[in-house]
Structure formats: C-alpha cells, structure tokens
Length: 118
Length: 116
Image (cartoon, rainbow over all chains, first blue to last red; front, side, top):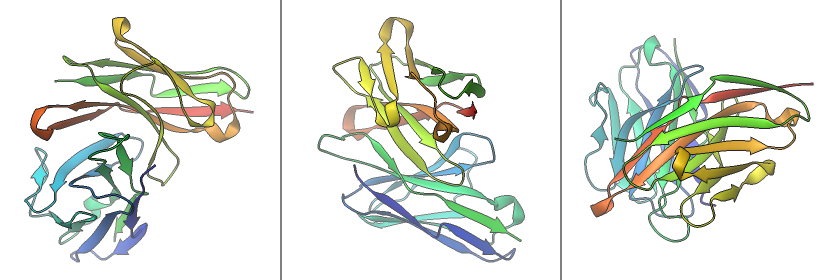
C-alpha cells in the first residue's frame, strides 16, 4: 500500500515556542491530506483538511491561527503549532487520501507525532 | 450525515479465543468501510476494507469482517486471538461524493486486551 511518513515522531518544546510537523506521501501524490489530534484513550479528532495549493479547511472549534497548515506540494503538508502551550500536548496524526487507482478513497496514515509542551 | 458506533470501548478475550469487535454505521448512501488498528504511540494501520463486491473481506493478521447492509454492520472478527492483537481498533466510514467530496467518520475505538 501507499506510504505516509510523519516527522518528527516525538517533539518536546517549551511553552510559547512553535513546532512544525511534516506529513509526506512517499509514493503517491496526495491532493488532500488530513490532520487529526488524538487525546489519550480517545478516538481521532479531525482538525482540518489540507488541500494542495489552497487554504486548509478547519473543523469547527479548531483555531486556524493556532494550527497553521500548509500544503505546498502534492507530497507534503505541514502543521505548525504556534505559541504552543501545555494543553496543546497531544498525539497528532496525518493521513493522505489516495486519489486514483485500486486504492481510491483509501486513507493511509502517518506514524503520528507526539508533542509535549513543557 | 453518517455516523459510526463501536459497541464496547474495551473488550477482553483469552488467548486463542474468538475476537469480535462490533461496528454499526448509518449512512444515506453506500459507504466505504474500514477497520484500522493502532498500537501504542503509533499511527493507524489498515486492517481491511470494504468498498464493493464480496461482503466478507479478509485482512491482515487473520482478521476478517462482513458487511451486512440489512444490519448496517461491519463487525471485525478473528477466530483465535493472539497476544500481539492487543491494541486499539477503529472502525471508519468514508463517503465519496460528487465533485470530489469526501466525508470521513471514525468510531470511538475499542481497546482489545488479550489475556494469557
């Protein structure tokens, strides 16, 4: 299947700093990527839909100025947590949608990025 | 709007016993159905999927699921649990609409524990 890679896997930062997480589709072009946040022992919460070449679509309640999403190419989307605070500590997961071929519509997930804000 | 319900947030089975994780969905149009597994501190891995065709689908690690339209269910089963099956399992519904629209809904997840 298709491969989606996230980097970094783990990141620790001080409160007030910004952190960037990358999501790459390694063997296919992803016009659409998704960013999720997962709290302990809970399901994934969709934060935003990232569309290549256009602005991201944020879910209700997600601060777009806080969570900056950039989808500059067909294989890369980035999530930047700006002015991070301890309550932003979470597990962030991206996924990419396969646009064509036998896996059309299927989502492939990155490995996740654990953010800890001190 | 579609929804996904996973019955039981936590299921425990003995090693070698049958695994049954339940998933019911609601959708006004034929959905794509998926089961994902998540190990601690990792992303999601696809176990199996139903799009069209045969309603009994087989996935990795010996898991299978059957799409039952009349029951709006897509339960996940495995005949014999293994210790390595202990993980969190998520059922998901994806609706592909016109003009490239895409709606994804996850269930809340079921944590599977396997008792030696």
